[in-house]
Image 1 (cartoon, helix red, strand yellow):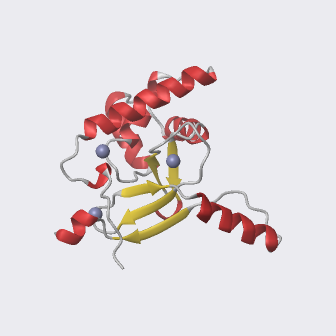
Image 2: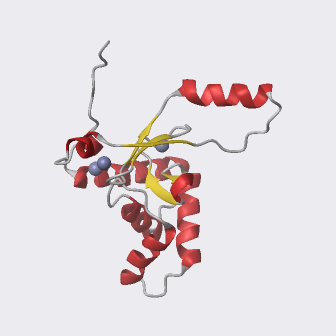
Image 3: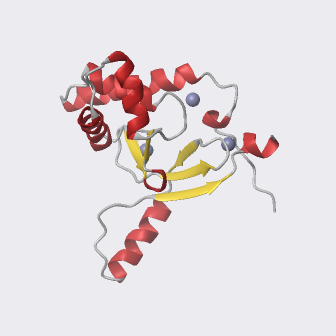
Length: 163
Ligand SMILES: [Zn+2]
Ligand SMILES: [Zn+2]
Ligand SMILES: [Zn+2]
């Protein structure tokens, strides 16, 4: 049985990543406006830095980047911005890497599932209610109080398999 493959844009080596960034910033700006909250220049800049590529980035990596523009930036600056971006669903935390990645489809509540490439480090977000529901079902059946959920799978992206 063969499964038809669709290589997502993010995994196409030649894709126009500027469009990914612009799309993410636009979406965040629109959502903030509709929620009546402010996407301050700093929050926006941190979101751009997270979106610099599709690889999850750690808080200290972000801080180093930010310091080039704002020499007074300190860890709390980054953590506050990241907390905001996560609360609004613009950024997800990758638990296994202690790193952050931009959400593909912000604006609705969901639990991201991530396919993470061991070679290039790209993390691709997918959504599947079935997976989230299965975890919910097991948790409640076992009397486990679920406070957060993240599913992360490691492997090789199509480009890295070819290389
Ligand atoms: Zn991209
Ligand atoms: Zn997401
Ligand atoms: Zn890869």
